[in-house]
Structures are given as C-alpha cells and as structure tokens.
Length: 199
Image (tube, rainbow, N blue to C red; front, side, top):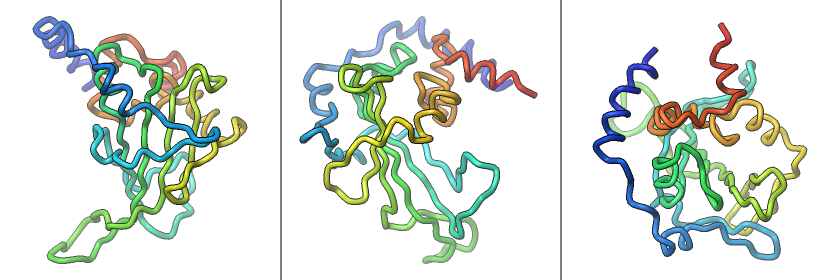
C-alpha cells in the first residue's frame, strides 16, 4: 500500500527535476570492475560508495541455522547509482558489494538492541559485465583481499537472484531508496511482480 502512495511524489519530483546529472566517463572508469587473470579485484574503496541498505539476520531459507546475529551492508558504485536513479535499472559495469559483520548486544552504554562490530566477516561482490559473463552478472566471494574467481554458474545465488530479483536479477526489493524508483520507472521484473501478487 505504501508503495503506491509514493508514486505521486515521485512523479512530481520527476517533473521538477527531469534529468539527473549524467555520470562522467571518469567517474565510471574509476569504479569499473578490475580483473587480473580473470579474477576480480576487490574494490578497496567500496565504503566510500553509495550505501543502499543493511539487513539483520536475513536468510533466504525458512530455517535459521546460525548461532549468532549478523548484519549485512550493501554498497554500489556511484556511477551506477546515478544511472539507476535516471533509468530504474543497472548499467553495464555495475558493482554491488555485500559486506557482512557480526552483531553485538553488549558494549559501552548500550542496554538493548544490536550494533555492528568492527570485524568484516564476509565480502561478496555482484558485477554486471555483459561482454564477460553469460547471463550478464557474476558473483564473487572474497575470503581476503586477494582477487577472487567467479562463482560457478550452477551456484544457488544465480538461480535465486533470477527467480526473485526485483530488478535485473538484483534484490532491489530490499533497497528502500531504489524500489520506489523502479516502481515509478516500470522496471520491476515479471517474476517479482507475480511474487508480489501472492497472498
């Protein structure tokens, strides 16, 4: 219900600001994915990129098996973020970074709830490169800062994103600043639209 209430405001904004500044070629080149011998280099400055959302204890299966709490934080390169705002979808060379951190309940003056601790426990990168990847997108998991191989296309992450991704096989449904834009631009995937209609 709330999604539909956002549409009039978005239409007004679109009329007032019909075009966002285009990403410069220099900006796009600076954040483009970099490969060494077919392996993706971790973008070390990803925390200077656009922050999209955080999840807490998210799981795509009904049963929770973890014995600890987790946060995940999602960042996207600035050039692709600007392009999404203008078009409602991701351009070629988009780079999304998922950073996982542990949760803590005790610390300093905190008396309730959870906060993120300082240690990064996992890094996954989702890259759109239409010339390099069949299916356009590639997933990479980093155990450290050394370049990572693309995960095999038979991995569950590919089929899950294709079946449930709201926009261009990405989970825009979890990005509160981008989902209204995708609705307004009419770029939601057919699979997600059908899923939304389920009771």
